[in-house]
Image (cartoon, rainbow, N blue to C red; front, side, top):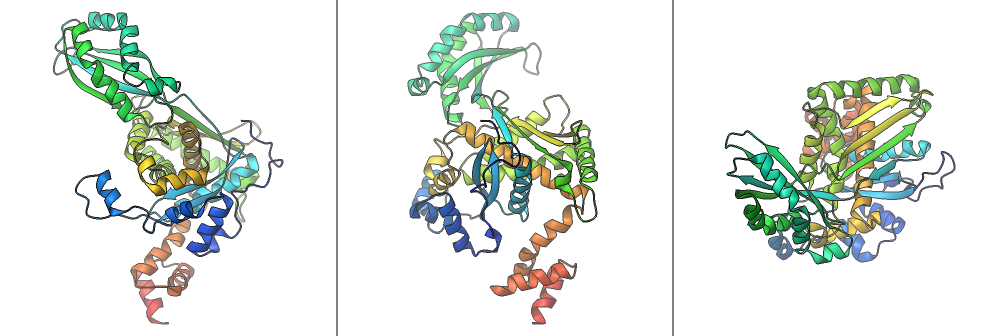
Amino acid sequence: MPVSAPGTQPEPKSRIEGLRDLEPIDRRQAIASAAALDQADSAALSGEGTLPLAVANGMIENVIGKFELPLGVAANFLVNGREYLVPMAVEEPSVVAAASYMAKLALKGGGFTVSSTPPIMRAQVQVVGITDPHGTRARLLAHADELTEMANSRDTVLVGLGGGCKGIEVEVFPESAIGPMVVLHLLVDVRDAMGANTVNSMAEMLAPRIEEITGGRVRLRILSNLADRRIVTASVRLAPEVFDTATLDGAEVVQGMVEACTLAMIDPYRAATHNKGIMNGIDPVVVATGNDWRAIEAGAHAYAARSGRYGSLTTWETATDGTLVGTLEMPMALGIVGGATRTHPAAQAALKLMRITSAQELAEVTAAVGLAQNMAALRALSTEGIQRGHMALHARNIAITAGATGPDIDRVAKAIVAAGDVSVGRAKQVLESS
């Protein structure tokens, strides 16, 4: 869907004035109203009694209780011309605020434009105990149609939805510590699922037939989290004046952002922190929607190192007219069916809050949040530094650690920020002096 031209898009419903100033219950009511959620979904997002212990006991092993994270909502997101309120489950201060503010700035350039490839996942089948790896590869490829048809017989429902195995690839490893091996890849369109169970089941089903064809032994039969056929690409374009501050010209800020990103593109030490900042935005959305954040992290970092050297997942550059152009490209294997997305009531409510209708749409919105988070970090590094804004938002945590409760939390937080000493010691002094 094309993005509206700057200045012509309608006032986003995702913009809720004064949201940060409301109490949690009022904030949730405002969000529920904006997203047209019913009372049950609103209650699920509150977290109170959302996940019964009996349900939790069925989700994982050795359950002793439940562990809670704050659930916030990032506002102002316009992605491919559609407005979104984005749920984020995260413990770190400044993440939700930064994403929301960058999304608000992005509105001046028409929001975020995102595209994605079909949801193709890989299942790997490792074959060992062979002496002719290239010949083994040829034999497997000669049976490609048979293996594809056999895999699809495992999940006729998926095939009926337009998904299923779309073919195979075979990797050859002539030398390894255990001798020659080949690895067959099943390429499976998993539609709206993350896909792990589907591709694993197909791989296990094919193992005996693959042994017959190759004369070798099948060992591993499992998906790869390097989902490099399931790529999402997000971009944003902003005029330099969007970044004007009281002391800096926007063009200077843009130049600083480009220079900071350039270091991440060539230096793995910077790239690790740079990409962690991107995941600060992505992981909370993945967690809130009941998806596997560990799989997303693994795929992201493997993709960042695909050239043989770890680098940045984003690029920031300036067009000939000075416009700042940011782009994020990474794997995004998310689902809206199966797993915790169907088990956890809050995950279901989170998807309703976003009005998500497909796994690809969820991946695209999530990528936009990651790009926004990266933009926020680079902007901060190019202006006042990363700590000033972060510590101001962290002050509430410091006040709570010092023993503040109720109205004293905000009072103490404001006092230690104003004093420029965001520490537990200073917070205790403010608390004791009242």
